Length: 116
Image 1 (spheres, helix red, strand yellow):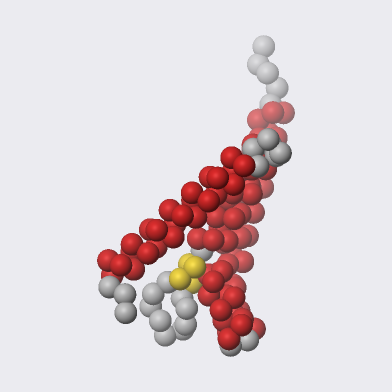
Image 2 (cartoon, rainbow, N blue to C red; image 1 turned 90 degrees about the vertical axis):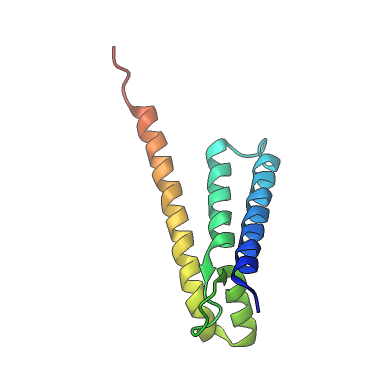
């Protein structure tokens, strides 16, 4: 069983590794995509990787929802995978909504007439 300190250390290590991987991916696809598309891709992947979910209904600890979803899908079937998948889809929807709001804000700022 994990102690609270090792549990927090594991989450910090996972989050740090995920953010480092997203930074490397952001820099790697730099010449291929525009700045907005790279940020959107990084945000969506961060939402997929960092969304937490309870591994079981009676468990109080958290685990990455993408791993819980795949584990539940492989071991217990689709009904058990619906609970962590729901939190994963909510986080993905929020990330997509944030990307859309950013895109709309950039369009509105570019369209604003210059004051003369």
